[in-house]
Image 1 (cartoon, rainbow over the protein chains, first blue to last red):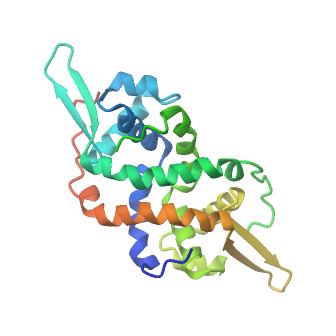
Image 2: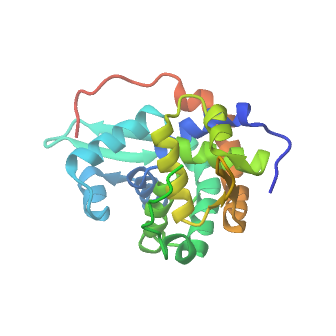
Length: 122
Length: 122
């Protein structure tokens, strides 16, 4: 699929931005918040298999810094902290689910028969 | 945008797979090959600002292993090596451009005012 309406120089910056939320932890957190709505840190921790507390903290901070989610702290004892998608984060879901749907459809082809041949490196 | 037809457990594996081609170098290489067709290693190197030879080699190997591009070596002196998107790689372009278009549209909001506040980490 050639796309003549864009060119690499225009598109290139988007690749760097997608890199900031295109890792698996960020994508999982975005999908979780989209599906379940408001979540607390410990709920996200339990719902994200394999993530460490440090990685979840970093992931949430990065997504918050990029305006994709909000972090709301309530002055209770103990303090209650809740995470929600922003409207920007919600608007990301449509193109993100297109990519997820494509990936699920083609997962077998992408992940099977990964070659170990590293000869003839160019 | 809630999406009731999927749930996190189904979608979760896709996030790990997207992670494999969601980095900025992979995305740039995919976009370049889509826009320009067949390219040689040195052409990709020149067209991808800031990438190292080692990183380009790794990126191309990973995309080849995941069936998104082909690497064809011609027995010439010096050997000629060409890279092309596979049909799977081509089919990725539609959802990928949706995400790129969203990102370009929202780039200012995502990248501006990144907070440096790391207090009150949860």
